[in-house]
Image (tube, rainbow, N blue to C red):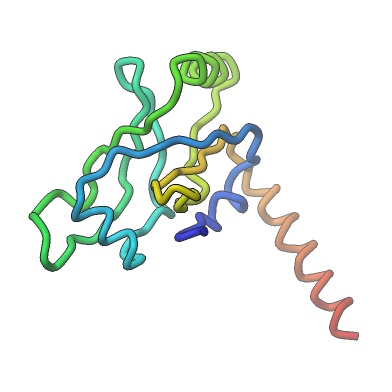
Amino acid sequence: MSIIVNRKAKFQYYLLDFYLAGIQLLGSEVKSIRNRKINISESFCQIINKEMYIINLYIEKYKFGSNCDTRRKRKLLLNKKELIKINKKLVIHRMTIVPIEIFFNKKGFIKVKIAIAKGKKNYDKREIKKNKELIKEINQY
């Protein structure tokens, strides 16, 4: 069950490899996520001291919970082999890590789908917009 999807990511990046990761949260943050009080569009992932963190993920404060920072760094839970593989791709190919969606798995845990992505140039984005407009015009007739 998908809670939130980062729609801007598909427009701004070429998405190459996908990974699933757990996320380390506080109890009040989980309750806010269940109420869909979350924004993923401005967030990104970064490897710091051989651990991956999601940065700038906005989770609104739960009205009955504790007062924690809404945009704090949150640790992503990945295998060591996956972290090494991702780090090699980032260093060699100059790419970035973007969160794509946040969802609950079958057991009820919150998971983050992340992608290794390469940024699109402005002319690529314009080309995509032109193609979408042409398809809309064709479908109208």
